[in-house]
Amino acid sequence: MVNYVLQITADLENLTDLQPQGGCDDPNFSFLFKLKCGRCGEVSQKETCVVLNDSVPLPVGKGTTHLIQKCKFCGRDGTVTMVPGRGRPLTQETSESGKFSPLMLFDCRGYEPVSYAFADGWRAVSLEGTTFEEIDLSGGEFAEYDEKGECPVMISNLRATFEVVKL
Image (tube, rainbow, N blue to C red; front, side):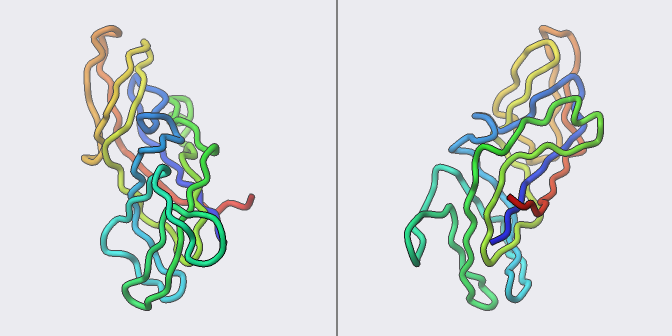
């Protein structure tokens, strides 16, 4: 079992607290990423979708997981289980310092997550307190105008990484 934390960063202009719509542990937020097989090294051609609210029973033993997937190349099964409670929103301070903010922890068995894909369902707050909801980051950026603060807001230069962590 290897634990991977998904970390994100971006350039935030007049924005802070970038996170999934319902918070870092949003039960309905879709995490999209490709998986690399731990046996043969084959990387999935399409992104895999993992959602905290969707769980399936483990094929052996007791318990549940959020994804069971068979490698199309070698036939090996692998699982991905989400571990909530470890994520934090990306703040402007973290962004300006060039650091990454942890979003979600994944317990992976037989697979390694690679290349996270940003999609829709994000939320951020302007420095003046205006909340921007249902932000779509699939195009790689977001630009809007904050009427209350009378300033432009922008998310650009999105980056994500999976880092191995020990618990």
